[in-house]
Length: 187
Image 1 (cartoon, rainbow, N blue to C red):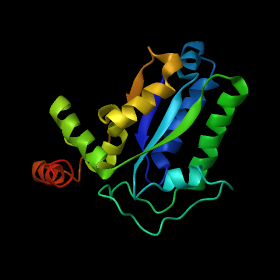
Image 2 (cartoon, rainbow, N blue to C red; image 1 turned 45 degrees about the vertical axis):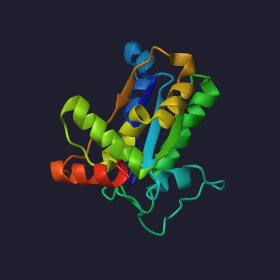
Image 3 (cartoon, helix red, strand yellow; image 1 turned 135 degrees about the vertical axis):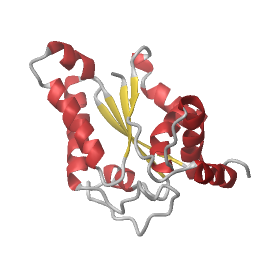
Image 4 (cartoon, one colour; image 1 turned 90 degrees about the vertical axis):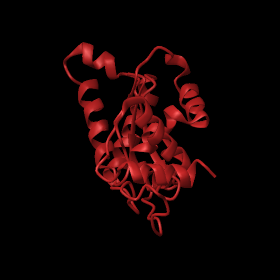
């Protein structure tokens, strides 16, 4: 697996993904271990709800608390992440540094427009509706800017699989999706 992309709010889902990668990395099953070795985990958020990015990239390693959620991706929004997700993310990254395996945690922050674009394209491609919180994890696939960044990060692993955790469809319907598209993509 080259990369696992997931939207991040408070960090629970990302903790679970990192736990799964770690469990299989250190497990007794060599096939599973080889499958996840070198996996890049991509934490995806929107501008205005990027509490993971702020904390993960802080110089002193402290948890940053946002003053509020200023994004269309309100179901993604958490003003701060759990300290556990920062600890697990750094452990995953450090294991990659020590072993030179390529394990990494990356933070991708998209605009609200890129998140909505991900929702619209995903609906068109797969006939499934997702809300902008999920659109954040789809943005690296559908946004030219973020796709170039992702593929650049995977340059040593061009044939690897990209897994996207697709979640969050209870807060969307066709009318909402149409309104978001008109507000963010048809200006």
